Length: 404
Image (cartoon, rainbow, N blue to C red; front, side, top):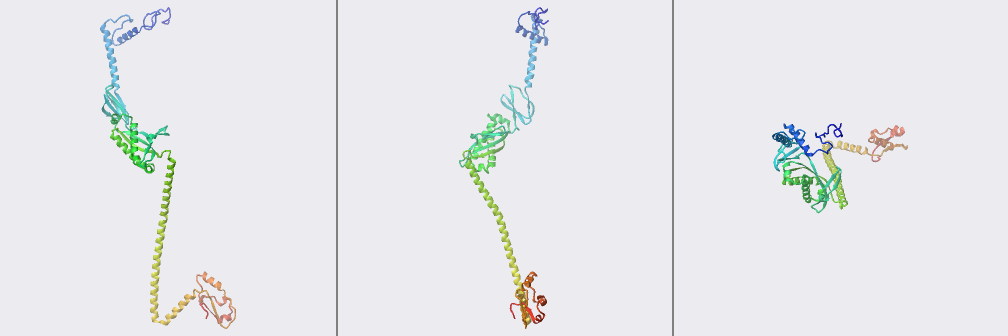
C-alpha cells in the first residue's frame, strides 16, 4: 500500500520516521540526516534513525573535518583550473598581476595565477578594423552623412564634404591597454578627423576634389600614424581611402557647372594639341619634300647646263675644223627640230590645176596617236592620198613653216 494511505501497516514517511498523519518533516532533521550520510561516507557512524546521537564525539568531528578538507581540495583544484586560458591564432594575451603588466603571451595554452591575483586580457592583433569618418554604413550599403565630421574648410575658404575610410590593426597590445582609455575606433576616428582638417586646410578646393585625392589620402595616413605613435596608442594604420569629396549640397549645382566648364576647356586643349600634332608633321614633311625637289632641280639644271656647255665646246671644236659642213649640219638639225613640231602641211605643185584632197586632220591625229608626227620621209604616198599620177610626178610635198 502507498506509504501515505491511511491504515497502512507502516506509517513511515520517506524520511524514515513514523509521523503518522502529521505535516512535512522538519528542516533541522533533514540537515541532520544529510550530515549523518556524509559522516558515513567519510568513515563516521550514523545516528541510527536520526533520534540518537553519534556514539562518540570525536568520530563526528573527524568526519566533519574530512568533509571540509575534501571540499577544500575540490575547490582548490577548481580554482587552479581557472588559471588555464587559451590564446587563439592572431591574438596575444596580456597577463596582469593586481593590475600591473606581467608579460605578453603568444597563441597557445597558458596558465596564470587565478583571480584575484592575476587576470588576462586577450587582444586580437591581426584583425583589420575599419573606421568611417564623415559617414556611417548601414547594412553594408546605405550611408548616412555626419556633417560635423564631413565638412572641412579649405585654404581658399571653401567648404567641402569629404569622407574617409580608415583601416587599422593593433601592433602593440600593451600600449593599447595601458595608454588608451577610450575605444580604439574612437581614438582612430578623432585622430583621422584632426589630420584631415589640417591637410585639407592647407589645400585648395579644386585640388582636394580633383587631382589631389590620392595625395591627400596618403598624407592623411602618414599624419594619423604620427599622431597615434606620439600618444603611444599601439595602433597601426594600414590604409586611408577617400570615399567621397564634393561641395555642400547648397552650392553643388554651381560647382557642377564650373567643373563642366573646366572639362570643356581641357577637351578643347586636347583637341588643339591633337590637331597640332597632326598638321605640324605633315607640314614638315611637305617642306622637306619641296626642299628635296628644289635640290634635285638644281642638280638637274646644273648637270644639263654643264652638258650643254660641253656639247657647245665640242661643236665649236668641230666648227673650227670644217666651218661649212658644221654650219649646214646645224641648219638641217634645226629645221628637223622645228618642222617636227609644226602642224601645217604645204604642197608645192607645178604646172597643174588639179584639186587635191589631203586629210590633214586625220594625219595630225594619227601623228599624235603614234607619239609624234610623221616626218617628211614617212609621209603618206601619193596613191594613199588619192592624187593623180600625172600631178604626183610633178608635185613635191614638204613640211615647213612657209611656202616656197
